[in-house]
Image (cartoon, rainbow, N blue to C red; front, side):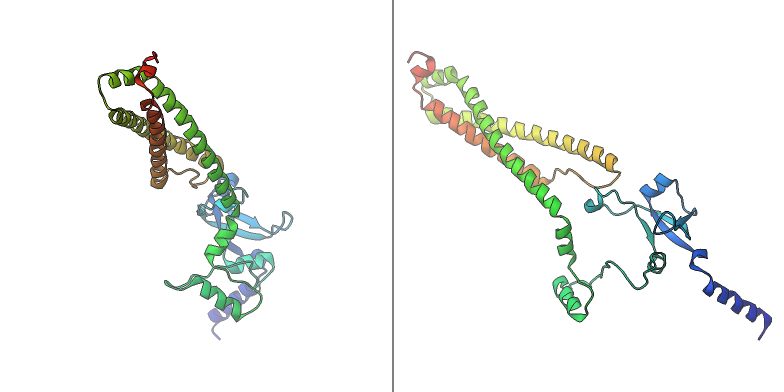
Length: 276
């Protein structure tokens, strides 16, 4: 055997039998953790399963920003990513995983795939990603229902408040309505005029409320994104919400205006004038 080949084989054998603690593995560090520990690409760190067992050397190969995940927001977890063999060697548990994901081909049925996976072998359970997301989001579902209940109560209270405002507004027009009745203006015309005024007020109020909600949403996102150091969207004013808000405002404004206007036009002119 040529001497060079013999030296090469000896080097490879030495690498194979070298202890794991002497190997340097590449890791990817989350940006928040890298900023907290002042780490950068190329820095060397030590890894272990406990503070007194930091025997594995690793080099920071990348600093990444994890995808925004609301389920991890309150946990305050900071992550380091390793290749699967390196992680198994670090934990001392080869050929064992807690969970893993399987990407299906386009058009495949996740429920049918999970059923076939579960029927093929024992020792694991397969779930569609939609079911996993639904189970992990139960807290947010409860919060969403709580907000919906608050929204319903707010709508009912605002409807009562709007009705009181329209009644007071129409009461201020008693003399105007009496004069119009005296000069021969029909009740229907007076009713439509008051209803038009109520619709304009409701429309302007809804536009003002939309702008206020948009500004409040910007302030909320800016505050909590900075507080939690995340790119999650905490508040969103979508087109559906705007349409719902404007529709409710117009509907409630028209109903309140119609009730107040009908109450006014049914009153006799002399009573409106204060002489009846």
